[in-house]
Structures are given as structure tokens and as C-alpha cells.
Image (cartoon, rainbow, N blue to C red; front, top):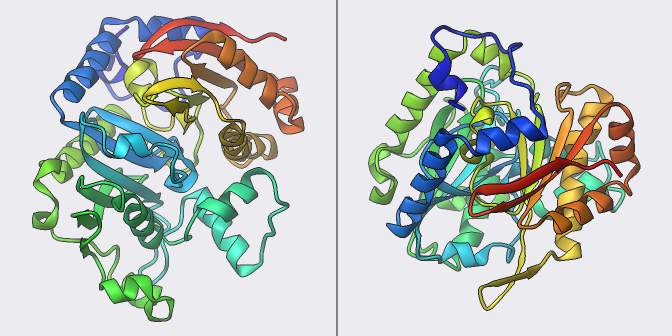
Length: 384
């Protein structure tokens, strides 16, 4: 099955979306295009040029089409310790930390908005919301460091830099235009930080004034400061954004509200858009990455505590769907692990939550899958 981007001769409206089912996902994964994309990923890994991308699970941002090991969490708030093995993995040579915002709503002198996770963090900080000690607000209170994309991105990168020598690039993406803004480059285990604002301003809250930081727009570092391992990532990003605008007549309009067709909760670090070309278009899939427990390099299972954190994040997407705040087309959830038994067990855990039950009662379909090395071995609807 060829991707929509390849098949389209003319611009297509957002309303013309492919049907997402167990059968269509399996066919997409078994297509020549998917095989080529997955093989490209493994070639990049063997050649030690794989990108590690830490990004928000939001369906809209698309920064690069480079082969990447991708970790998705709300506000890119990946928990420390979950994926530390990847930070020093020999097949990865650079790390990208990615925030996002809505460029059409941005007003110079104010903190860019558009990420629901960071907005919830802001509400928690200013007292507009209070965490009940569980659910999505509990996750955000514990793991999202700031409602500001510069602070959230650079603080996350600085924490990761302590345990890796790989160069780190911090960016934010205008998810309306898909334009990338480089915010900081961190090398030598955090000893060298080239940031878009002064280092002392970053770490001392009393010196951090968004009015000044964003007074002239989104501040950036010079392209020349981007580590050479990232190549010409800015030009590659601009070309990708241009391609989306060319192929989709209503592209920017359709990016305004997050409205994926599917949420995928997966243990695979190969992005769903690479494994399922049917999901190539931005705003198609909301993704959360579930870590395995590894001992001496071998997978031994799923940590219940880590699964709880993923469940808390998934509540964000489901609750927004139920309350009419975006996600109106999200009628499918796929639990995707290395074996069907594990995927089914995770589905059972989720179905203990009232919000998941309510979503299913309103027509939501649960799929479970077994995936090995980017290839789907089986995928089916969960009917219990």
C-alpha cells in the first residue's frame, strides 16, 4: 500500500481520511513501502546514524523524516531511567528533544502555548487546577518540568545529558506550519550548552522573564551552532513542511485542533508513521511509548508502575475525546507489544478505568497487536 503522500496527484481535504481497522493497519505494515521504511531504520541503526527523538505524543508535530528511535510522552516528559540504555546505544549518534506550540496563537512577549500537557502544568502551578493524586494531572505534576517550551526542553535535555556523551539538540515545532526552531545544543555530557538565552537566565527563575525572552518572537541558536551529527536538519525540516503543505490543501487548518484517528500505546521505538504508512499524514496518531523491563539486555516484562504512568497519560486523550475537546475522530486504540498475550493483558488493565469503558461504550474499538522488529505479526480487535 503506497502512502497518501505518494499517491496524491492533487491536494486532498482533511475530511478524506483512510479507514483505520485491524485489517488496514496490517495491510499497511505489510506493504512494500513499510518494508522499505523499516529496512531503512535498521540500516541507519547498523551504520550508527540513528536519531533518538524524545517528543510529545501529540499527533501534529512532524520535524523530520530521518530514521529515529522515538520516545513519546506528554510534553516529551520521558521518565528518567525508563530508556537510559538508548542514550548510550551504539546505533544512535544524536538526540533530539522536541517541544511544540501553536504559531497562529503566539504573541511576542508571551510563553508559546499549544501543548495540552504544558497547559495543564501551568494550571497546576498557578492553582487553577489541583492534582487528585492519580490520572493525567498526577503524571503532569510529577514529570512535566515547566509550562514553558524552552525550560521544559532544555531542562529535560540537561537531565539526559548527564548520562550520555551524544550531542543533544533541543527544538520546538510550530505544529501549524511544522517549522522547527532550534533552542539549544548540548554536548560533552552537559558541560557545553549553547542556548538561545543566557545560561544564568535558564537556571535562575527570578531572572527568567518571558516578556524579554519572547519579546522578539521565538529565540533560536544560530544554525552553525547545531552539532554536525544533525546534518542540515533545519533545511530537511523545511522541505518536509513544504511537502505537507503541497499535498494537503487544508493542512494548516487541519493542524489547529488535535484530532488523531488512533492512539497507539507501543513498546516499539520505530515510529508508527514508519511502520504504518497509512498514518503518514500529521494529526493521524497520538503515540505513547511503553518501556519494557530489561535485564542484561533481555526483555523480561512490563513494570506495573510504568504501565500506570502510561495509563495516566492515555486518560488525557480519552477524556478530551469524551468532553469534546479535540480528538473527535479518535475511535481506535491499539495496544502494540512484542506478543499478543501482553497486549491483551494491557487492554484488560485499561478497561478497569471508567473513562476507557465509557469511550468504548460510545463506539471506541480496541485493537491488540504483536510486533517484532517493526513487523506486525498479528493484529486483532479485542472483544472481551
